[in-house]
Length: 84
Picture 1 (cartoon, helix red, strand yellow):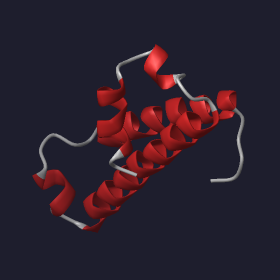
Picture 2: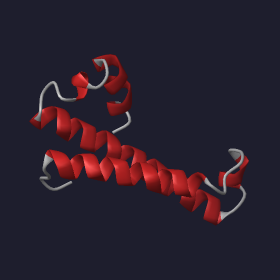
Picture 3: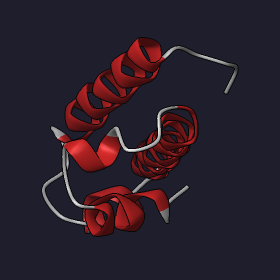
Picture 4: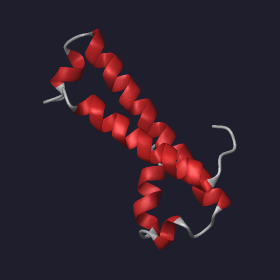
Protein backbone atom coordinates (compact mmCIF):
# COMPACT_ATOMS: atom_id res chain seq x y z
CA UNK A 1 0.00 0.00 0.00
CA UNK A 2 1.63 3.25 -1.08
CA UNK A 3 1.81 6.23 1.24
CA UNK A 4 -1.68 7.57 1.71
CA UNK A 5 -3.06 10.38 3.82
CA UNK A 6 -5.20 9.64 6.86
CA UNK A 7 -8.27 10.65 4.88
CA UNK A 8 -7.35 8.34 1.99
CA UNK A 9 -6.73 5.43 4.36
CA UNK A 10 -10.10 5.93 6.05
CA UNK A 11 -11.79 6.22 2.65
CA UNK A 12 -10.10 2.99 1.58
CA UNK A 13 -11.33 1.18 4.70
CA UNK A 14 -14.90 2.38 4.14
CA UNK A 15 -14.84 1.40 0.46
CA UNK A 16 -13.44 -2.03 1.35
CA UNK A 17 -16.22 -2.58 3.87
CA UNK A 18 -18.80 -1.71 1.20
CA UNK A 19 -17.19 -4.15 -1.25
CA UNK A 20 -17.18 -6.91 1.37
CA UNK A 21 -20.86 -6.29 2.16
CA UNK A 22 -21.71 -6.42 -1.56
CA UNK A 23 -19.82 -9.69 -2.05
CA UNK A 24 -21.63 -11.25 0.90
CA UNK A 25 -25.09 -10.50 -0.56
CA UNK A 26 -25.34 -13.83 -2.37
CA UNK A 27 -23.85 -15.83 0.52
CA UNK A 28 -26.28 -17.54 2.88
CA UNK A 29 -24.02 -20.16 4.46
CA UNK A 30 -20.31 -20.96 4.51
CA UNK A 31 -21.05 -23.80 2.08
CA UNK A 32 -21.87 -21.18 -0.58
CA UNK A 33 -18.16 -20.37 -0.72
CA UNK A 34 -17.21 -23.99 -1.32
CA UNK A 35 -19.76 -25.12 -3.87
CA UNK A 36 -17.91 -23.81 -6.97
CA UNK A 37 -14.97 -21.74 -8.22
CA UNK A 38 -17.06 -18.57 -8.15
CA UNK A 39 -17.66 -19.04 -4.43
CA UNK A 40 -13.98 -19.68 -3.78
CA UNK A 41 -13.01 -16.56 -5.74
CA UNK A 42 -15.50 -14.56 -3.71
CA UNK A 43 -14.02 -15.95 -0.48
CA UNK A 44 -10.48 -15.13 -1.63
CA UNK A 45 -11.45 -11.57 -2.54
CA UNK A 46 -13.20 -11.01 0.80
CA UNK A 47 -10.18 -12.34 2.70
CA UNK A 48 -7.87 -10.08 0.71
CA UNK A 49 -10.02 -7.04 1.49
CA UNK A 50 -10.03 -7.90 5.19
CA UNK A 51 -6.26 -8.21 5.11
CA UNK A 52 -5.82 -4.84 3.41
CA UNK A 53 -8.15 -3.23 5.97
CA UNK A 54 -5.82 -4.54 8.69
CA UNK A 55 -2.81 -3.09 6.86
CA UNK A 56 -4.56 0.26 6.48
CA UNK A 57 -5.31 0.32 10.21
CA UNK A 58 -1.66 -0.43 10.98
CA UNK A 59 -0.66 2.50 8.75
CA UNK A 60 -3.18 4.79 10.42
CA UNK A 61 -1.83 3.84 13.83
CA UNK A 62 1.78 4.22 12.68
CA UNK A 63 1.30 7.73 11.30
CA UNK A 64 -1.34 9.06 13.67
CA UNK A 65 -0.71 7.55 17.11
CA UNK A 66 -3.76 7.58 19.35
CA UNK A 67 -6.23 8.24 16.53
CA UNK A 68 -7.78 4.77 16.57
CA UNK A 69 -7.91 4.71 20.37
CA UNK A 70 -9.90 7.95 20.31
CA UNK A 71 -12.65 5.93 18.58
CA UNK A 72 -12.46 2.57 20.40
CA UNK A 73 -10.21 0.88 23.00
CA UNK A 74 -6.85 -0.50 21.82
CA UNK A 75 -8.01 -4.11 22.47
CA UNK A 76 -10.66 -3.66 19.79
CA UNK A 77 -8.10 -2.51 17.20
CA UNK A 78 -5.46 -5.08 18.14
CA UNK A 79 -7.87 -7.90 17.28
CA UNK A 80 -8.53 -6.37 13.85
CA UNK A 81 -4.87 -5.64 13.12
CA UNK A 82 -4.02 -9.31 13.74
CA UNK A 83 -5.73 -10.07 10.44
CA UNK A 84 -3.14 -8.19 8.42
